[in-house]
Length: 240
Ligand SMILES: Cc1cc2nc3c(=O)[nH]c(=O)nc-3n(C[C@H](O)[C@H](O)[C@H](O)COP(=O)(O)OP(=O)(O)OC[C@H]3O[C@@H](n4cnc5c(N)ncnc54)[C@H](O)[C@@H]3O)c2cc1C
Image (cartoon, rainbow, N blue to C red; front, side, top):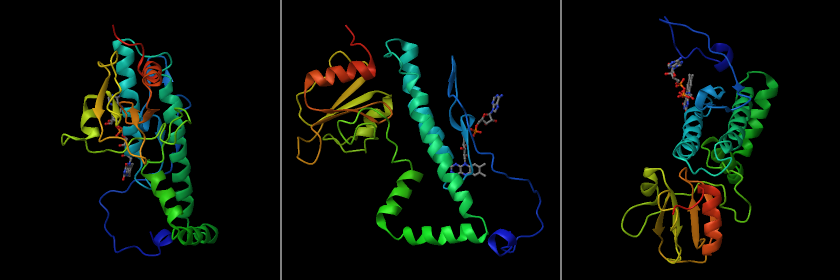
C-alpha cells in the first residue's frame, strides 16, 4: 500500500490476505450452438469504474428477449446471432477502458504524468461527458442503421399521458412503439409489441420510435409501411 498509495492508511493485523491480479480476458465467441456466454463468463476485467455488473446485466437483457423469441418460434433469421455481434464489442471497449485505468494507477513517472494530463482534460465538459457515458454505458449504440441518430441507442424513459412511464410498459419484455402521431398501428405484432401514444408531435423529437424489449431504438419514422417493414425485420412475421 505504501508503494502504490504512498501510505499504509493505518491498516494492520489482517485476518485474511489473498492475491488479486489482472486476469483481463474476453471470450472469442459468445455462442457455440446451444451454449451462450454472458456476464463474467464472457468477459473479465479489473473492477475499476464499477462496470462489470452493469456489463453482464446488459448482456442478459440483450440476450433474454432474443432467446424467448427463438424458443417461442417466429424469431427473425439471425436474431440470436446478433447477441454476440452487439455485445462483444461493448465488452472489448470496457476491457480497453479498464486496461487504460490500470495503467494510470501505476506509481511510475510516465503513467503519473499521463494521469495529470488526463485530470486536466477532465476539466473540459466534453471529455468528462465522453468518459462518464463510456463508464455508465449510455454511449452504447448497436448497428441498427444510420438513418437517424437515435437508431441503436437506448431510449431514455419518458412519462406517458396516463401517469405511467415508457420503462413501466417494458417490464413485460415486449417491444414498445412510442407513437407521438397517434395514428400508427402495431396490428399483427400485438403479441410482441405494445403501443404507447405520446403527447403529440413536436419539432425537437421524432414522430414515432420503436424500441426493442432491451430499450434500444430499432426504428424512427412516421409512415406505417416503413414501420411494418421494421417490425417484420426486428420482431419476425406478423401473426394471423
Ligand atoms: C473485487 C471486485 C470488485 C468489484 N466491484 C464491482 C463494482 O463496484 N461494480 C460492478 O458493476 N462490478 C464490480 N465487480 C464485478 C462484478 O462483481 C461481476 O462483474 C459480476 O458479479 C459478474 O456476475 P456474473 O453473474 O456474470 O458472475 P458471478 O457473479 O461470478 O456469478 C456466477 C455464479 O455461478 C456460480 N457457478 C460457477 N460455476 C458453477 C457451476 N458449475 N454450477 C453452478 N453454479 C456455478 C458461481 O458460484 C457464481 O455464483 C467487482 C468484482 C470484483 C472481483
